[in-house]
Structure formats: structure tokens, C-alpha cells
Amino acid sequence: MGIYEALGVPTLVNCAGTYTIVGGSKMSAGSLEAIRQAAESHVKIAQLQEKVHEKIAELTQNEAAIVTAGAIVGIYLSAASCISLKYKKAFKLLRKEEIARSEIIMFRAHRNAYDRGVELTGAHLVEVGYPNNINMISEEEFENAFTEHTAGVIYLPSTDGGWVPPGALEIQKTIATCKKHSVPIIIDAAAQLPPKSNLWSFTKNMGATAVVFSGGKYLHGPQTTGLVLGEKRLIEWMWQNSFPNYGIGRMHKVGREELAGIYTAVKEYVALDEEATDRAAEKIVALFVDRFSGGGRFYFQRTYPNEAGQPMARAKMYLTDPGLTAKQVQAKLENLPRAIFTIVENGHIYINPMMMTEEEADYVAGVLAQINSEV
Ligand SMILES: *Cc1c(COP(=O)(O)O)cnc(C)c1O
Image 1 (cartoon, rainbow, N blue to C red):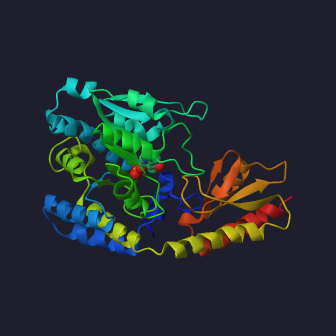
Image 2: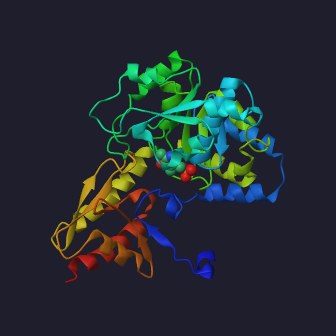
Image 3: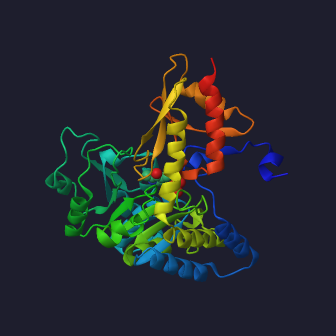
């Protein structure tokens, strides 16, 4: 009997993508084996961190790297380390007033549930601009937000079709302004893989100080990991402020199992054939579009990019039966003995193929075909 069966927790066919609420992604056999081996022996964690961080930096073409307990801790520790960098002091040695008067700037359009990580530092979060395109912020207005207390800027890259509203200054202009003021800029790109070039494009190509990724989304690493990649001067402070150094990151420790798992996941991800994964995703999307083109209670259309702005297609369900809602279809799918998990966005079910196998796609299409022909 499997662990989930023993616990009485139903497993799900994931048609939603890399949603954290259902566990993000699945680890590869290689990552799981690395975790098993890591768990079997003791090592000095600082030594393991040094090697893993060095190798991840190399694999992702960055100067430095650090593994954190999820992307949100990456945001928290990088924001805190912007203040360390400003005062040249470990976070635990900073005076409360020094932290409280420090300012981290964000565009209002970029505020989101994960920036709690910035507020947790105790620094002042300064908002600029509006989350719409009526009065787009100018470089001059952005620059006006900089003071002697500015410690850093957190930026969410806008992605075509993603959930980030307009209202921020363009990324290159933002980075240029930060450079002019010698203020570090951190990019929250937690869900911005694929494309894998994002591992280095924000830092090496565009000049951002650091970029944050979730390890448990499309990287297929352990769900509790995140990566911060970029300049050594910031990432060194992050390590100083973390486990095993009794900094504020001590409460967000990353174990040797996760270090081994994420290292293996990054190694596999940079070697991934992106064209092949795109083809596999398109094949699943086409299956739904083609199979439900002959009438019934709903049909599908291909949409691109997906909800996070990732360059991958999804199949969007259009209901033609006025007596059927997306929520009803969702409930039917979830109540099956082999449950199917979907997300409803603005009244539409989407099939996101990122975490689906062909076998699962056939199963879901078969179930939907039954619902489609019910009267
Ligand atoms: C998912 C996500 C996070 C959090 O990632 P975790 O690894 O789950 O902590 C942060 N920011 C954005 C934009 C995300 O999409």
C-alpha cells in the first residue's frame, strides 16, 4: 500500500500546472536517488553548501548561487541582505532603527501575496506607480522614490499574458536606474521557468543584482527549495544571514537532502531539450482541441502563453451548455475515484499540460468525453 493510500489522502491527476497547492511538480528519479544518498551519510553542511552553490552558479552561468527554503525565503533573505549590504553588517547585528528606516521599493503593479517576505524583514516597503496603464510611471518618478535609506528594489518581470498587471517601469530602465544609484535590484522570477535562459538572462544579460526562482515549480526540485542567483556581494550576505550561521535564515534551514535534490534538478533542467517538452505539451493541448470539436456541451481552444506567462500552451474550455458551469465540471472531475485537479480562471477550466503524461491526458479526455455527451 502506498503512503497516500495508507493515510487516506486521494492522489490527483494534475491538469493545473506547477501549482504549489498540489505540490508544484514531481521530482525525477535522479533527484530522488540523490536525496536518498544524501540522507544516508553525515557531511559538514557548510562544505556541502559551498560545493552545491558553486556548481549551481556554474550551471546557471551566474557569479554566485544560494539554495533557500522556497522562493519566498529567497525574497525574504535577499531583501534582508540588501540591508546587510548597505550597512556592511550581518542582519543580526543591525540595530532595529537601521532596519526600520531602510526602504525597499516595489512597483504597486508588482505587489503580491509573496512579497510578505519583504515586509517580514522589518524594512519599509515603498510603493511606486499604479497597477494599471492610465498613467505609466516615468524614470523620473521612479527615481524620485530613491532616498538615502533605499536598500533595494524588488521587481516582477512582466510576462506576456501573465497575471502581473501593467504599471511598472520597463525592466531595463529599472535596472539602469538602480545601477545609477548603486542600489541592488532583485528579480522575483519564481515561476518564470521555462524558458531556461531565464536562469541567466535577468542577471548576466540584463544586469540585475540577483534573481529568485522556485525550486519546486518547473525546476522539478524539492518543493521546499528556492534559488537565488546573481552577484556574489549580495549572495555572500545571504549565506551569512542563513543556516548554519545562526542568522535570521536559521529558521528556514535547507537540509542536505534538499541540497542534493535541487542540485540534481538544476543539472537535469539545464540539459533539458526544451523543444521536445514543448512538442509534448502541444500534443496534449491538440488532443483536447481535436477531440472536442464535434459539438456537445463544451469545446476547447489553444491559448498561449499560460497563466504565469510561461511560453507554453494550454487548452481552454468553452461551455456551450447554459446548464453547465466550469465549477460543476471541476467538482465532477475532483469527485472521481481517480481524481482530476483543475483550476478555474474567470469562469473557464484550463488544461495545463506541464505536469501531465500522455496516459493522464488520455484518461482526462475520456472522462471529459463522458461529461460532454451527458444530457
Ligand atoms: C510561486 C511564487 C513564489 C513562491 O515560491 P515558493 O518556492 O513556493 O516559495 C514567489 N513569487 C512568485 C511570483 C511565485 O509565482
